[in-house]
Image (tube, rainbow, N blue to C red):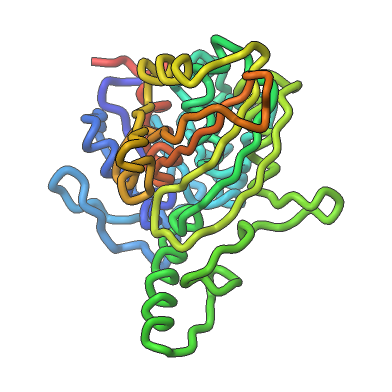
Length: 341
């Protein structure tokens, strides 16, 4: 792979696709040529990349000739169909969907945690679920020093997790609600404005857990390479445009203090502590939006655990950046085939 690879973005017109472009530009990711790929209805339109208008091409089986790196964010069915084609054409795929995450032959990577797994790829590297990334970036450095044996996570997930169309529906439904007009949802099947509801993925009738919750459980165990971690998750959609929040309580094998957690996280990559008790100022999606780091605050003892093994905290991260595009670009930067200048 040359210093200036040919990079294809699959799903370039989506919310994450736009962030792929912005993130590569911001991080000075070297690109010899950009191929912008989307559905037939977007073909012929253009996207701006570093001052040039790149014509969007229709995604076809022939789209990957000469491509070195393919960044996918177009849904699981598209990834399952086209990622193997891209690999066969010689590209390395970084996939943002859930299509390959639990495939034992596909590395599931958060660079701050398991960048070494990138070298194990056979053409495809999976980007984890956004909720998993948000929780695990700050949990990992703690886990390394004092193994986390149990965690309880409650998520407060923004519209950005469901894509650009869901973000626009939140805007439109809020406007209609304020004006007293009826609104029929098309993207999210439940009223979104001024409402909170269980994450809009399918519920497993046997367990009662939705798909988002199951992903967090399974992906955490794979990334941490620890099948014994006990994990409870409740995933909820909230009327916020972008940046997810999560309330996390974790139990370690040995006692752990607030000060220890702060000391660990103050040196952790990809983490910024926002924890001002005097001003009651803690992580918020309005502050996390547009930021690369996971914001961490409300660090405190879990008073329900008298043994001193447990800590509660609150985190927020931009779902479109660290939860998606940024994580994928970070993976691409570390590809062993890429000759870094």
